[in-house]
Image 1 (cartoon, rainbow, N blue to C red):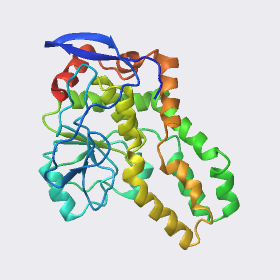
Image 2: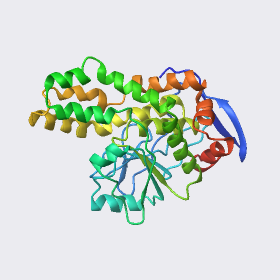
Image 3: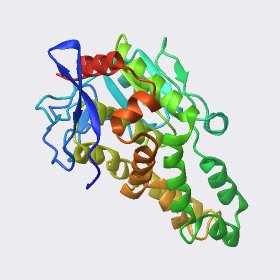
Image 4: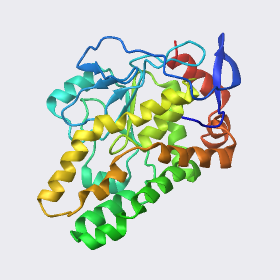
Length: 308
């Protein structure tokens, strides 16, 4: 993954001793996962530890990744997920064993209206941090709901779906509301009393961007953070294929493959956000501080809490 040099924050002894360091990009992944416990098992991708649920498919621990200076992101403190509105009773038991203290939900009101709120262990309530999807969810619903092949092709075909995805990723960086919510969750992570989980609907775009930014801020090389981002394709593949098959079988879509660009994550989408980041803020450090509103103490707290 060949990207421009970005900047992150590293700890030098004490929590308050923070330096802005230029990261070397394109480094190979160096982390490895430890054995699974509590219903969690590792995948073949480096360091990825899945939280296995029946009602969600893209729930993972962000720990285990190696940083550029030889340290490692701690397991059990930061989790990423897709929507938790369909969790089973067994899922609730698994989530309870994670010891979560906070759940941040990036979904918009429209998504909550159609999909429903999170179903979480007793005593745990989600905090709403709605991040714009640039109308993508509504457009997808309209295309599917039309049941008309010509309309669906006009709305999603011929590169239009890919263009929608790139525009959504650009908005992650340019939209003030999106920046405020992404920044707020990172600040919560820095000061959380225990493990925190953040999620959107599919756990791949808004969640994928926040995960990428978090890992880079912790000193994880760009190539490794990019592997975590792309891993959503593997975790979501079966569920996404099943949805396309059901839409075709029901006659709702003649060509459900039109949805594939919306269902997948691609480096092209991530690059759209990174290009926007460079244009507006110069580098990752500028985005973290100027765009997301984190100060050096926030960045040092993230590093001290999440890296060992």
